[in-house]
Image (cartoon, rainbow over all chains, first blue to last red; front, side, top):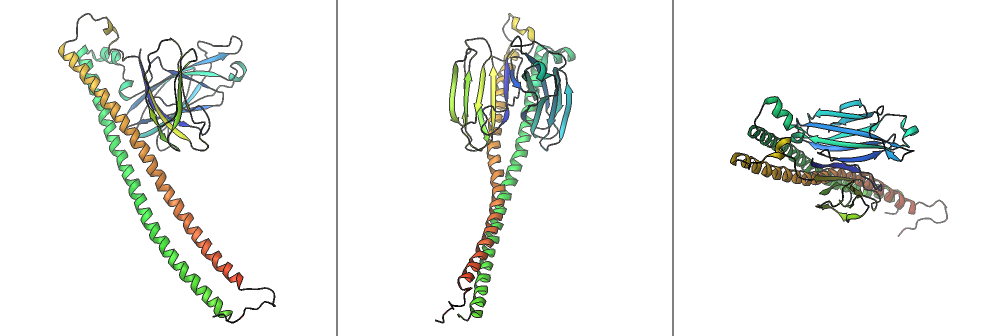
Length: 227
Length: 164
């Protein structure tokens, strides 16, 4: 199966590894290593009313055999999703394999954070956990064979449905783009205003300070009988 | 495809390694790049971004990768023996065109994100600098006056200011 990925990640200053964010990763997706108390965050920039499905699978590192065990029950991962305003949308504990879904109600950068909550890891795993991750956004989150079976669609109808979903996604993205442009415009106008008012204010302060200086020094020299 | 959204000079190092450890792709200080590769060896490929050359700027990097071709919409479609009907090939054409539209939207979204981040940064910097300058203005003018006054104020009674 093919995979398609895209996303944003924040980079920690001089550190080599940056956090990755994936839009859509197929079964041949990617994995990353996570330490015991480490938290990995992914940023997904999505428009309004978009569904996001995330699948993960964890594997524990076996110190003796020096290989990753195929699957380990008992390990848990805590998934936390924050919306662009910082409000927590989803905060749940899942097992060693999990699937989480959420729908965005605000357009913007959503942060999906994963961290392990298991304390046993240090004993057995040597502190390393491999997490396979797969995040699907919007139209890619739809499972077309399932939809075809549920609604009993022919192949042509299914293709039409796929095209409709794609067009809907494009429309949402355009709305989002309009919203962002508005924000950008407000920011630029605010900068413009600030530059204008601060320049005027600083010139006025400069003149007033100059006047104060001269008057103060004049009265000082008069008192000293120099003038 | 990778693009730096925020941070410093908007550049980052990137390298891709194949399962045998050979470096397939390595670029330093790139702002935006895309890379296509035909995999020879089966296994785990590694791609890494590095910000080690930067002293204090945090970076946000967008990346996007696609593995293989898109799967058919129904899983058993790979076994079809007849060619596609005209309607079906029209659907496929539209699907591909819409994918191009979505890609171009992503491209513009990233460019807009970069510009907006810079504009917001500028906005807050204008405030901080203006406040800082005003404070500096007050401090400098006040200390100028104090310093000048101190030249003409002697503690010892010997050196008295002389009338001109």
